[in-house]
Image 1 (cartoon, rainbow, N blue to C red):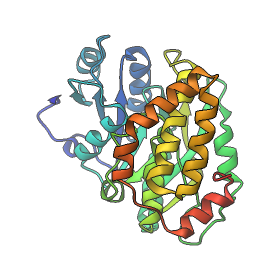
Image 2 (cartoon, rainbow, N blue to C red):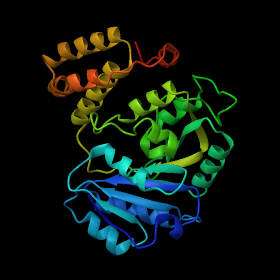
Image 3 (cartoon, rainbow, N blue to C red):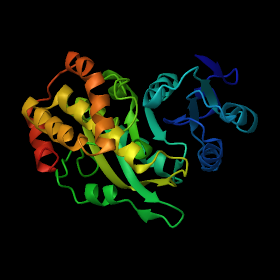
Image 4 (cartoon, rainbow, N blue to C red):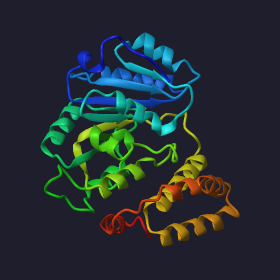
Length: 301
């Protein structure tokens, strides 16, 4: 791993309590747009960009156009785990994740930091996601706002048991305590394992409507079938690692049956089977109380 950054440490260049961490790969145009939005915030946060071995000149553009950004150039694609590197470099107690095609609305990061300061059990704050140029509210945000898990008094909003990384601010120490994002999952629904491990350790996660992230999905995305396969593979890996084995077996059997006539399912199954021994080696079932919360969300049917 090599880094390119100004001589001064991150904290001396920017005041504040939140660092923005972005992992990127071959999305130079989208990343530049995101960095312009972040640079335009009234209280500019420190920003760490971790480049997953891009071949499109991403790192060169960041270095030339955004010299205040801390840049890490990886020799290989580390997937979602690239964010872990950014978290380690953050010199603030809280870290906000942005994707290379998402950014935070003015005032949101300061509000998030204030809420973390006031709620010591809070490990993840999930903001409202506005999609596209028209800013339509994401369906996941609407579901979180409906508070199916209630609103505990020691959290700043409805409790949640999952999060999209592009709209998440985390307490650095809590995130690090559960190991961050898993290299076994690599990419695709990687947030689920972090959320379960934080809940198992007694940390809280909450949705806060007036902390807002804008997401304009890049056109340079894998097709729906490939994305479905990645997410399905990782969903099942998380089941094998943390959730009751009866459900993991049932879901894997259903995927195997689907794989007989569906190429995306076959791809998901193949990826699952290659990683299953490692998943079982890292099996640590979550407490029954966490399982019951997932059942309330309808995620274990």
